[in-house]
Length: 375
Ligand code: NAD
Ligand code: ZN
Image (cartoon, rainbow, N blue to C red):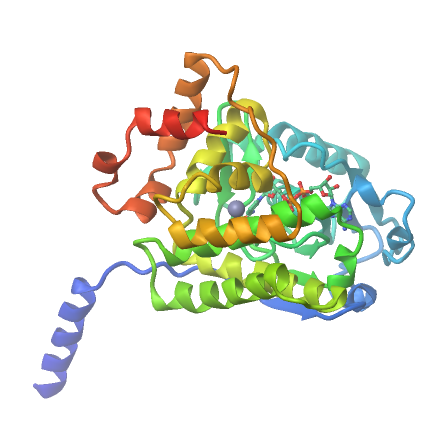
């Protein structure tokens, strides 16, 4: 009788519970300067046989560099250089998948992405689309992917986006810029070698690093915040401050920014980003402005929402002599503003996280237009 009462009580308690998300994490990660050279050993156990190659999708910026000689090619493995001049498109993913299917009789043993957020997203998407039929654009959204991806490895060469830990791959499709969010998207293995970020140009280092900083600010100031997100967000924020306002030596700074990116990504996994990201999506959709710089362009004008965050951002910008471009929205038409505003307002969870459930009463098209006009 007692036991039965216990079970009934537990069932009632379960019904009252919120539906918590059960999301995947990267199961294997290696960290350390030079750890890239262990990649051959890591991949060995995942090689199915000699006719099932590893495909390395590598940022074209590394073509002809010494990094290429360190890629552990075996049998019929292939390197495909992918330019990161533009953010990834669903059509590009479809073409890569067709090429791989055409070039090899067997399904590859795995896909390895080497580069910044663009290449990491490309690798995730290609590994998913090798097992799921149709165009990548049909899977843009939440949990539309039916089958697990093939084994995929992410190797960041630029720190900040958190794409190495996230369960999404952000793609521009024919209709929208939206991620393929799924439990199968997350990498099976990540290789964090801070030395790979050595050659990043200063402005890019700043913009992509600020993506991480803005993840922290938006997560820590959002209504979705919980102890899980907070624990990662606070650590990432502390590391960003050390990197951008402290006096670390270059190697230490690379180590810490790589870990900031990881923690920043983990922080938003269980919460959400906010106003800067919602508005930056509008800029990116209309004008093709890249994620990192787009966030900075918006964030500088968000004192009303993130006063301390913006003030610290300005200190970091000044310390590193970064001048953001101006006049970006100067010659846009009314219809251009309408497009950006509607793309931005469609990011409902971001607004809800930033402003609460009543967010529609707190933000208007006029307000957004006024903010865009400052950029
Ligand atoms: P990126 O990958 O677009 O690269 C920016 C530039 O840096 C490119 O020109 C690239 O060639 C260069 N670069 C990269 N590594 C370098 C190195 N070591 N040395 C010299 N140059 C190097 O930049 P990003 O900011 O890392 O990524 C932006 C992309 O990430 C966007 O497409 C965005 O949508 C996506 N993103 C994804 C997630 C996610 O969770 N999946 C999160 C945030 C952003
Ligand atoms: Zn971001």
